[in-house]
Length: 316
Image 1 (spheres, one colour):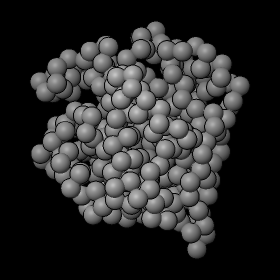
Image 2 (tube, rainbow, N blue to C red; image 1 turned 135 degrees about the vertical axis):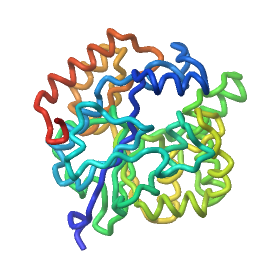
Image 3 (cartoon, rainbow, N blue to C red; image 1 turned 45 degrees about the horizontal axis):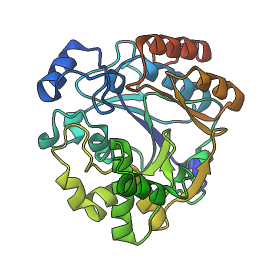
Image 4 (tube, one colour; image 1 turned 60 degrees about the horizontal axis):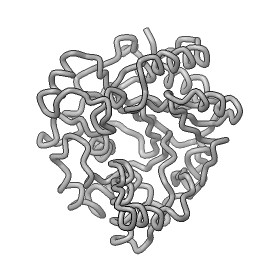
């Protein structure tokens, strides 16, 4: 069967961090956002309507996507046309155990995406700030055999660099790096292969059955140990573990990206917009963070409005 004959869905995580009810729920558990915190800063949850623009990019560049699943915490975008039969809102309560709720930890939520009712075996996963910049086809995400094409950034000396940083210079890794390293170490222990490639921080391909295999078999105990991590924790297992294990067990095709294919636009860095226009990558991410200001967010929205000016059929 040719890869373009598979049904392929897209899954998003989405949160409206501007919602007072959601803010009260978060504040009760972990306190108000801290601008200097990479784990609980405003940029981690800010809603700049990136999802609207991401869906515009999907309609424009990947109209062959079957269904759009949007995973939320009792929220929905006010502009979204929920009468569109291709749009499915999935609440955290539908896929996650009660011990994990309420959850403000995307790493934990991602462990349960395979539980989405009706999700296709072949699916791609996107954060709401990831976009397509040009036309793509199913064969850009899955091989003829139906295996995911797994995109990494090439980091051949990552293990040595991080060892030097932590053990020699005594400079602790940040939360994100610790979670990726934990995934690498666990896969090495389970499968005997240590992968140094880093997530390219953009739209990724998965098999639903692979995710179930990892969550319920290969890393079952490790995932269960993290079931109450409602906020980001250094012991979390980053979702790259799903891809590492798929590669280790021969169910994925490794592909390294450059900035000409996949690029992170850090919205607080004007030079990144210049690089974007120069590289014109296939995939790009509008990365908000603890370093971004509201002015940076306004500039990002203006950029996306210019890039994707036309409403999609996913909008009211």
